[in-house]
Amino acid sequence: MVFPSLNSVRFRLERLERMMDRIAIQKSALVQTVHPAQRMGATNLLQYLSLRNVDIRDLQDDLHILGLSSLASSESHIQRQLQAILQRLGKEYKRGSLNPCDYRLSRKEIFRQSKLLFGIKRDENIPHIMVTFDSSFADDYFFIKQLLLDGMNVARINCAHDDETYWSKMIRNLRKACRNTGKPCKIYMDLPGPKIRTQLLKKGSADGKVTVKEGQLVWLADDSRGFNKNDIVIGTGEPGIIPGLKTGDHVHIDDGLIRGKIVKKSKAYAQVRISRISSSKKRIKAEKGLNFPDSSLRLPPLTEYDKSCLPFISKHADLVGYSFVRHPKDLALLQDLLKTYKKQTPGIVLKIETPEAVKNLPALLFQGMREKSFGVMIARGDLAVEIGFERMSEIQEEILWICEAGHVPVVWATQVLENLNKTGLATRSEITDAARAAMAECVMINKGNHTLEVIKTLQDIFTRIGGHHIKKRYTFRPLSIATHFIRNR
Image (cartoon, rainbow, N blue to C red; front, side, top):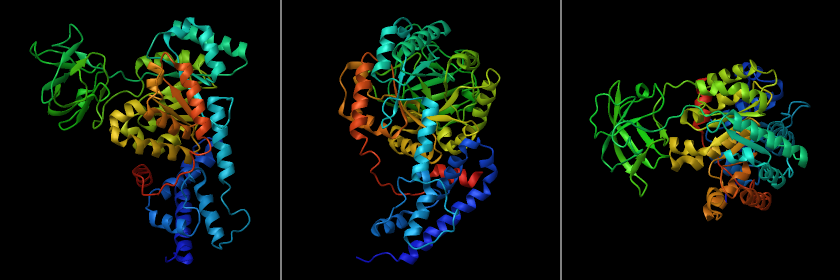
């Protein structure tokens, strides 16, 4: 076996180090815009993005052959890890010239940010656990108390359901349980965002469902004028959707169970041909989700209902979830609005659930870093429908890497032990999925009848996997997210 040349490996590493320094200098003004407590993470994020803008897989192979760190699993302290390798290859650094963001400091910073956002937890070696509250919790103090005793760290209230009367009762019960148990718990409230839901405007409107078949034509429109009584006309529930669509765009209905493509478009409607139905019941139902993964929709970043929730959220919540955020300017709007209600604003959790949010993730992080603390939620439900199920594993990994590079805490959400929660029996695949969730700082559980069992199962999985889940090796091909950011800002 021919070993790589040490001089060649050192030369390539030094070139990468100079590139990181150059990018950091070029974008130093951006780092100065973030909160002082976020600047180390912001600088490391820039350096990581600069590295992920190039292909270093051959270099990683050579480093691995030489028995050196291949830079994998070094997202949180990327330049210092590179410098440590160069030291092993004989490079000497002047006192104070090494990047202070090393492994220990970066892990300490991520832990600090997580504690600031999600609070104190029982076991520091497993993620925080967020539990979605059901309407019944408004009148069930004892169940909330048991959730706390079993390990709930964050209580999630979805503002898409119930109203301020119910939310107030839930919060009173939670705070009473916290006092009586001595267990702290943060309150997280989700802004619903735009409700893009199916409305049956012609055929099927009476009973709320209509049978369809593959190859059939249906219509998207804001109203039913001009259509025949047997036409299947679907309203979107939000004005401004139709103008943002174009011929060739894909349309996903009911979490992608029904898929189609726009074959004809006018100002007033879009004609969709159904291409695939993945359900045994071949029906379109009212109030099911609509997704347009290829379309640039003209939707307000915050709905009027979202804005109406902000006074209550500002008064009662520790955290606020921002649904369907797409651009940094969207986040800036929410940051400014929250400051009008209270000086100490709730921490914002950015819900990444659209292709635009994925593409703009670095810019969203830098905007979020203007605050002392914030987090990111991988909202895997809508995100999987928007980007395609086959890409979900890849994209959720990329989000985790980039957030770790910025020292930003992550919530792993949607369908965690879903079958166990609903039926009392876990599938093999969801146990494996739950083990992957250990890479995040917080894991969200949806509503179900077996929530206590889900919490106990998660804690058991996390305890068992805790010594293993960071033992992996990734290769660094260029990330499109990094390339988009480095070349366009």
